[in-house]
Structures are given as structure tokens and as C-alpha cells.
Amino acid sequence: MATSTYKSFLMKGTGTGSSVTYTKLVDIRDYPDLQGEPETIDITTLSDGMFHNIPGIYSGERRAFTANYDKEDYQTIKALEGTTQKMAVWFGGTVAADGTVTPTGSDGKFTFDAMIDIRVLGGGVNEARTMEIGVSPTSDIVFSTGT
Figure 1 (spheres, rainbow, N blue to C red):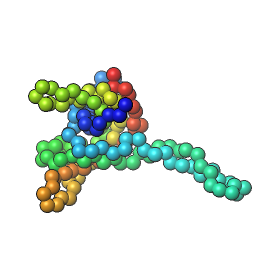
Figure 2: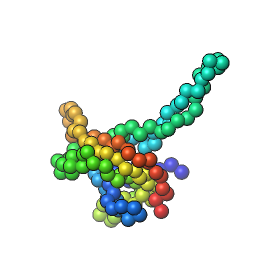
Figure 3: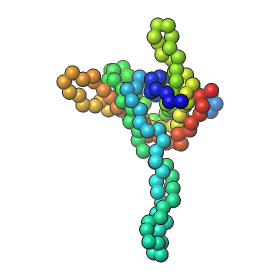
Figure 4: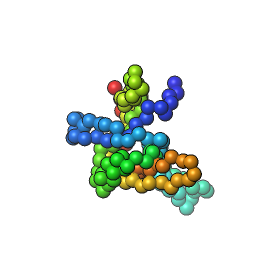
């Protein structure tokens, strides 16, 4: 069954080992592809009539999340630059009677360590100010069922 992107969250972890707890870092407007594509390794020989490849390692490139610009959120994330953080993207949450959305990760959690950077994006007439949170994984992105 398909699910909506509604209730998708960028999370930051604190703690170590099995006692890491995650809190929402900032409300995001979008999220990038979470798994990279595997590189290909050329195994073509001079006897081959066409190129032959095998899968290599997966790309660990920087991933960009867009969020609405907020001065306090910007300062919080800016203070994290240059450090490795425990990060996650959680799918699924609950909605309280007052409309407050709480992340649960009930539709899946993708956890990893990463370096963070932030930049304010350009804007035009009648647009919301936005910022981009760059996340450069320093570990594998690991999926869990969220239960």
C-alpha cells in the first residue's frame, strides 16, 4: 500500500549505543533520495564486444533537505556544522487533537551518522524564505521497521 509524505521528519539523535534518543531537528519541506545508487565497476576485457560492469559501493554523497527559514532553527543547525551527528529520517507519526504532529517512525526509520551544513537559499517575489540542510553521511544508512 502506498503512503503519503505527510508525517516525514528529519531527526537528530543524542546518546550512544542502544540508548540513542531522537528528536525532530526541524520541520522539512522535502527530503532527498535516502539510498544512493551503486557505483559501477568496469570489468571489460579486450576480448569483450561491449562494456561489462558489476555493482560497486553505494554513493555516500551529500543529501539536501529543504526547510522554511527560521532564525532560531538556522542558528541551532549552524552550531552543529563541522561535527558528526546521529541523524535519522522517520516516516510516520501521530496527530493530537490540537493538530500537533509527533514523529513515531511507525512507517520506517533510516538512521546514520553524518556531517551537517546549512545555507539560506535565494528567494523571489511572494515566496517563503527557505534554507537547505546538507547532510553528508559518514556511516551506512540503515533501515529499520520502526517498531
